[in-house]
Length: 293
Image 1 (tube, rainbow, N blue to C red):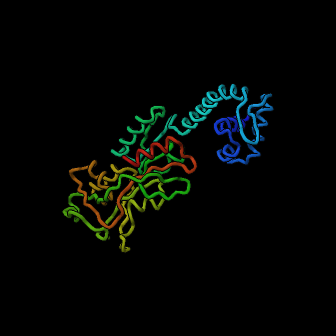
Image 2 (cartoon, helix red, strand yellow):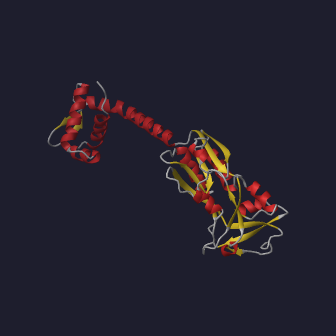
Image 3 (tube, one colour):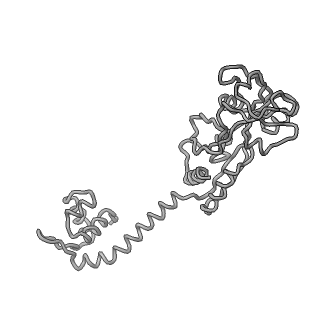
């Protein structure tokens, strides 16, 4: 006959308590239900496990023998279930992470920490086009992606936000603003901003190259590019200016371009995203490392 784990649990607790009331409380059952479980187990075994009177409950010799054999077997069963639970909650298999542009120090630290603490999960990284932040995720090329904010996609979950940096305006050395140590967003009025092309949604491209200042003054739309390097080449050729974060500006310095801090616009920031309803233990573990990087 098939085993009933609830019957075994009831027997073990009653063997500890030797009291039907306390056993019922520990199991969140009625005393009558405890009695039913015990009687069912005794029928299954074919012998009485407890001597029951109105004044005391005691194990029979058969009950003592059964208890001696059952305790280690039940403990082993609990370990099997716990091991399975831990495996299900652990990072394993392969985790594919995409990122736009160059991997920042925060991403590299998270990758290193994740791999050290999750040796059973193989982490791979690949570069995503800067002008297509969500395509790799939707085409299932990657399991999660590090992208520039903003993100307002219904099918995407936004995880930890990190790597916040002020925005700068990259201009040619001969530009009228090149000598400024900083500018306000309103001083972008009348400027021509190089924008990103490609399949990125309009709100995302607008955030990277706004069409107007905070007060509503017009900012001209310049040529479109797919990468930062393409944009820098057009800036050097005098085709326009470009908003890039201070971190990107520091790693892409050129003798013919200067970058000016811009106040009055939101900082640049990155976020880890993944497909809605598809968070895995591996993604959760990597997100945790990004949160503390």
